[in-house]
Amino acid sequence: MHETSVTTRELTRRFGRFVAVDRVSIEVGSGEIFGFLGANGAGKTTLIRVLCGLLKPTTGEATVAGYDVYTQSERIKQNIGYMSQRFSLYEDLTVAENIEFYGGIYGLARTKLRQKEKEILKNFGLHRHADSLTAGLPFGFKQRLALGCAMLHEPPILFLDEPTSGVDPRARREFWDTIHETAGRGTTVLVTTHFMEEAEYCNRVLIMHVGRIIALDTPDALKSRFEKRTMQEVFLELVGKEIGETRTRGQHGEQGEKP
Amino acid sequence: MRRIVHMTQKEFRQVFRDKPMVAIIFAVPIVQLFILAFAITTEVKHTKLMVVDYDRSTVSKDLVLAFVHTDRFDLAGHTTDLREVREGMRGWEVQMGLVIPAGFGADLVRGLKPQVQVVSDGVDGNSSGIATGYAHGILAGFGADYAAVQDSGAPPAGLSSVRMEERMWYNPDLSSQQFMVPGIVVVLLTILPMMLSAMSLVKEKEIGTMEQLSVTPLRKHQLLAGKLIPFLFLSYVELAIVTTVAVLIFRIPMNGSYMLLALLALLYLFATLGLGIFISTITRSQQQAMFVAWFFMVFMIMMSGFFIPIENMPPVLQKLTHLNTMRYFMSIIRDIFQKGSSLPFLLRDVVPLAAFGLTIFSVSVLAFRKRVG
Ligand SMILES: Nc1ncnc2c1ncn2[C@@H]1O[C@H](COP(=O)(O)OP(=O)(O)OP(=O)(O)O)[C@@H](O)[C@H]1O
Ligand SMILES: [Mg+2]
Image 1 (tube, rainbow over the protein chains, first blue to last red):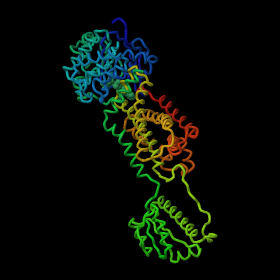
Image 2 (tube, chains in turn orange, cyan; image 1 turned 30 degrees about the vertical axis):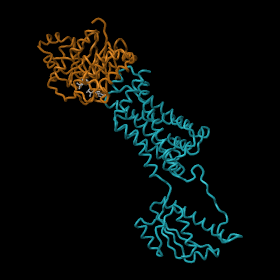
Image 3 (cartoon, chains in turn orange, cyan; image 1 turned 90 degrees about the vertical axis):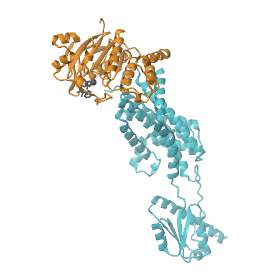
Image 4 (cartoon, protein in one colour; image 1 turned 120 degrees about the vertical axis):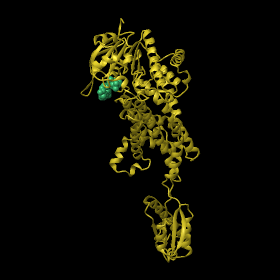
């Protein structure tokens, strides 16, 4: 974790008078798995959207892959992969067509695209579904496809917004295996989650509460600082209310995302 | 460039995978063409005529024959009681009564000015007006013919000695199909590109894929080009189909150049595709987009001279029609079909069409934002 791939300084984003992200300063090194924890409305999605160039910051500074979010968002887009909280691939295209489309948009050469397509279908257990319409896939498979499409162009930085919400525990493990593998190849992964045990898989976690950072450290350091055995307890101590496992979701994991 | 190709390919896949959509694109226009062409007609034919003949002379019989020999009037019956005409109208069996007074034949022979009475069912004011006009023509013709047969020298007093010969140029039969069908082409080239492009852009916003696209290096112009090329293509396919049906089935004479038609259609498509983009920028859901598109369309059609001749509108509305791109293309397409006009004769409409088309298109493209927040 030598170079930094994402930095923010006093980054703030308001919606009207409401402050969704409040003076957040972080530095994420390359190859790091950086987790965002926080209750609903803590501002995790907003922060990620600002870093991806989907929202302009209100004040503060941020660079992604060394590029400035205010002025160089087109350069940033070449260097990131983004998996949004809400499933957003084309349901009326088949799995293979989705991969081909996004590969084409990212400018992958034909042979490279074929190779990547095979790889994704194999690694994510999707080969049987290659020609099925995406709409008909079980949710877990959809999420894997979304992750695959976000990583098609082998971006140095990956933003994953609740990739495992609504996914069964076994599939969740596989998801994290993939994330670790990818990070092992030097990719920086910024990931939000509601599952406290997933926080343990991160190199460092940022705990957010109503837009602010309330803690930022490695899971071990956090646990020893608060003298707790699990991240769940750390979080409870800090935020004072229980989320995570008690937060059950529908099969589709969709929650009314605010427009 | 390859990005545009991928975008276009994806768009085509989505359109053709949506079977109801395919039906809407290809079947509905033809159905519309048939319904509109047959149902919307400003001609009045087969008006049901009841004759009240108090004269019963050979002259009055000739007069009735003069009416029923045309396909504009059908004889619904003879009577000697005017009340039967009223009864007939109540029962929708009679639309017009022709009352020939006693002594009509004798008066005409003597060169007096005999009068007949025409009573018309005014419920459908438009049709009854037109039918009354036909009746006028027949009566005038009959009077003149009669005078010519009776008299070898000077025409008798009271009947006009000047006869008008009517010739309708460009549409000799005054067939309303000839007028309406090209207009329908315009309507279709409005609905399809405007509706489809607006819906497909808004759909991406609605399902969240626009956000996904926004984090890719896909540029705005690539996104829009990839979106619009399929609809441009489909619009031309539609134009070809509808024109073929119009010419082969409706026998609409196409007197102008197909090349010119295709070329000027492009200008109009810029406007309608541009409106589609614009609608997508002001709406959030496909439903909203559909609603707004309908609103635009109704306004455009009403103000285009398609149904309501622009000359018949109040002056304020007439001025307002100058803001309507469809107005220009409507008149261009009718000119090309019916008069075979070439470009120099169309410039009056082509210049504003081009100006509106390119302005609407560029403003909409500028207003369009890939960024969601
Ligand atoms: N476009 C917007 N306009 C107004 N308010 C917004 C907008 N987007 C988000 N917010 C508000 O900002 C706050 C933070 O939202 P955000 O989606 O970032 O939270 P989150 O931590 O991702 O929560 P969740 O766990 O529910 O995904 C919320 O209170 C939300 O209502
Ligand atoms: Mg969120």
